[in-house]
Length: 278
Image (cartoon, rainbow, N blue to C red; front, side):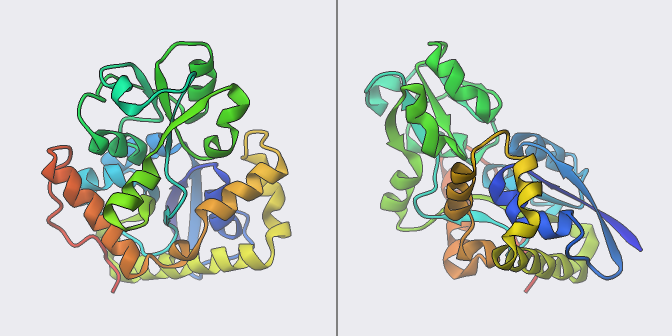
C-alpha cells in the first residue's frame, strides 16, 4: 500500500471536505493517506519546498510552485460572496489606508494578493495567523486588517467596521467568482494518481453532504472553539459547486487572477499547464 501525504487547514470548509478521508470513513484502494493539518500560509510555504504529495494552497502561491505542482479540479475554495474583508476600528475608506500598517493572514495568501491588486501603497503589511488579526486590531496595533474565514461573520463582535469586501470588488470588476485556494498534486506523481485523488475528494465531499453527523466531531475538534452556527455558516459559504469541480468559470477565475498578478509584477508567469487531469 502506497502512502501519500495530504495537507489541509483545520478550518471547517477543509475538514468538511476531507473529513471522510481523514477519519477513515472513506478509503482509497491501494493508498494510505498521511494527514497534516496546518494553516494555509504554512501550507503555502511547505509547497514551495514540495514537501507534500497533495496540499491545500492559496492561489497566490500557485504561480510560485506551478513547475512542481498541478491543480486538482476538486476541493477548491472558490465562489461568490466569500472573499476577504478589509476591516478597521473606525469607519474609513481604502484611500485613507494607503501607506498605513495593515495586518494580513500571510504574505502568500490570496487575501494579500487581492489587497495588492486593488491598488498601490498597500505594501506596509504585517503577516500573522489569521485568528490573531481581529484581537490585535481591536487593541489598536494596526490601522486595518484583512480578515478571512469566519472573520466574515464575527468582525463586528470585535467592534470593527468593514472598509471593503475585496472579493466583492473582484467579482464586480472581473465578473468572475473569486479563487481563494485549491488542492495541488505533485507533478511527479503523474496524472493517474492525480485522477484517483481528484475522485476521492469528490467522494469525500459527497459523503459529508449526506452524512455530516458522522464527521461532525472531527470538524468540531479542529474548529478552534467556534460555535455550531458559525461552523455551519463557514461550511455553507466556502463549500459549493466549485468544490466538486472548478468548471469552466472556476478555471477561468484562477487563470485571470494569476494573469492580472503577473501583469502588475506581483507574480511570475505560469508557463506549465495548471492541471494534470483532463
